Image (cartoon, rainbow, N blue to C red; front, side):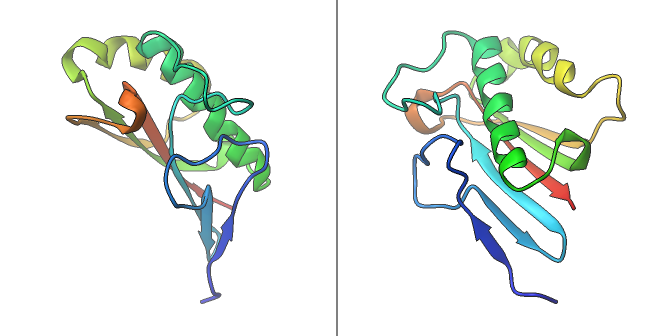
Length: 130
């Protein structure tokens, strides 16, 4: 087993806590959950509504994937965290599936939570394989 590598991606949003954007070990790449923050100015307000926030989160994850030389085709597993699960699940799914279909879809877990950083409605993380 090789030692893990930790990557910060310049194009990705500034982290809201102390973490790396990605960690890699033996070809497995773990992307830290992304928030719907603007990668060019994290002081901007979050987008309104779960669809806009999901789009921003997915775009931020794509920035991290690109920063480590991967794409959505490398994503094996996804975890989604929603603060308003019943209300936002269908709308989030509309945006989410537009990033993956018609390709085979990665494994996925979606969890309702009581709160997220910056009062976001959604956070998503990826596990990818090089």
